[in-house]
Length: 320
Image 1: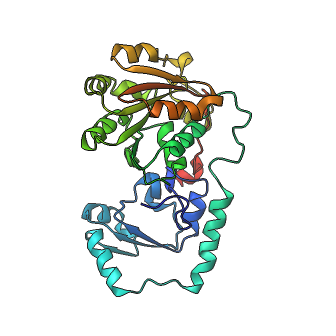
Image 2: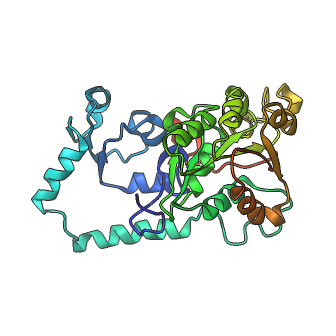
Image 3: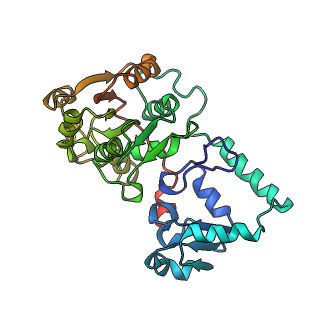
């Protein structure tokens, strides 16, 4: 609805958010919540991602969600957001105010000073970085594209680098971060909107959760480009194990009980055309070439096994 370049769009908030998400929420004195349940990944445990003095006004159609947070809310309306917005619009009270200028300036400074991808960040890289890949995928996509993500590293990175400048849509699992969901979402989108091109991203681990649906893709030859991130197992798990459990890894890579699949063989087994993106120098060219091939394609994207995922919150901020 609103591209990231819009000066009033601060991007994603919460666990999947921008580098400045926590500072932005902690600095707000009033938060108007429209049809959002303030899930823990966004608002924190007992809304601790917000300032204690912040006045939170919630408009939500599900009374259970309001009741769950009622003691933390300054005001709430149990109603359809659409009806409330129509009434608010009639009041004509929303006007630009001089006292808002410093706040907007503060927000812009945060946004401009904390880009997810620094200039020339990948200039000397040999291996493909997931931030680089998903940012290029976003730039190569157009209004005819639907993007899907599911869980793990692609879920975080997609939320942080997709800008929607060309009116693209993203369908994702949201706060549930459901592994393996990207392929079913892609199939559903392809059935619902057959004229669209579906750009689905999933991980080498998440792939195994719904691997049987690859046959659905090939049988109907949907216009789905499935990008499977090969980073040697569960990179988001390794990030958590390294940062929060002193590097005690288990079940997250070849050496700890999570051996990689032969993705080329997987594609062949399900009668899908196989492509591989492994050269960072040809990244943009390869993405564009693959996007213009008709029908379903299985694309292995070889990324660094030591991929770092930017977390908007430290463990202390998350748990307090």
